Length: 218
Image 1: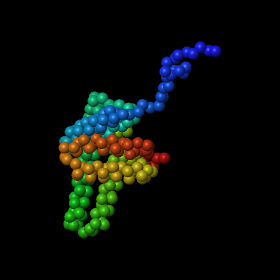
Image 2: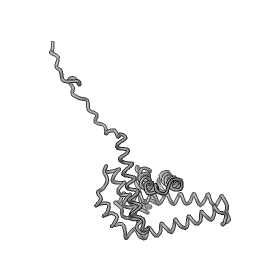
Image 3: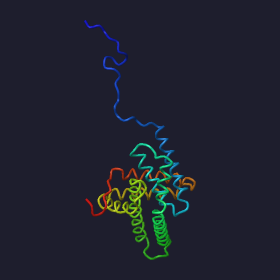
């Protein structure tokens, strides 16, 4: 009879190891929530001069992309480098975005107030078009982040291709922006910067499994 060998509580085979991914607990969730809140605050401060808004969004999008692909946030130096590099190319994007938002806001306000003929049907069409444009812009932001915070023109072409080949993702991005806009109206203004960080993260989550291909390429 073979003598019994005491190998500890796990028997002859040693400890049973779980080779799967480590489970996230509430501390990880809290850390991510705090990081995104800080990201939103920094994004808002960096975008205050208006002309720097696109650069701030590009750097924030690139940071979120790094967090959910590499597994860690970029360094402060890397964020500043991306922000500075995006300032000049992003100035024109900022002007275009502000002008488009202003025109759409005036249009919706005029229709809602009855100052323009068309009534509710035209208002619904305008809101739908606005949501579609917002979804496209959101995908552009995601693609800019994937490119390290640069390449707005190429990102715009790639996002247009994604809208054509993945209309569901386009609609989801537009829905995410619409929900964010409603929340921005409902919550206290002090919380708006925090919301910004969560919106960027939500857009990356929506488009996470979609590979953008520019229009005309297969």
